[in-house]
Length: 200
Ligand code: ADP
Ligand code: MG
Image (cartoon, rainbow, N blue to C red; front, top):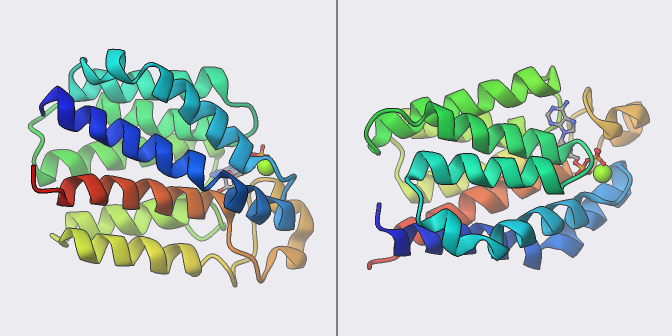
């Protein structure tokens, strides 16, 4: 991938997180401690500050650099979890940048999140967006369908009972709110789709 497109991807993801920080914080205020927006903002501002350096790397190394930055700069659960996701995708990206290669890499990243979080799909977390998106990607879906899957999957966390993370402390009171990490994962997927849809 050319460095300019890679830079566009980094910028698009980081900007999306930073501009939605207040929304993510509001979601986390309802069922957590209200820091998810700030956590994501802090992490992706650090990524943005190194955008040139990261964009010059190979896709796999760039993903690992983003993961490292998130692990180092972000507190809370989401730093290590998003860090694991990017590191895992980077490590998993061993083959060509085609659909099969991307699916394998995304699945490796998801596997690392599951390991780190001792979590799985259905527990009202970021995994409830990432897992169905990976499945749709594996099934050959186009970008519009992937975008739609991410939106529906984030919305589907509203009626879920939280089993992992701070929201699980609320037990039944976690029901009726969208999971903040599911929403940030949706934003991440949308930003990637936006750049891949650009005709440059
Ligand atoms: P904290 O919970 O430490 O305040 P954040 O508010 O930044 O961290 O992130 C919360 C989000 O992290 C949740 O909405 C959820 O999606 C995700 N999360 C929390 N714990 C886990 C876990 N064990 N596995 C997967 N995702 C998790
Ligand atoms: Mg929080």
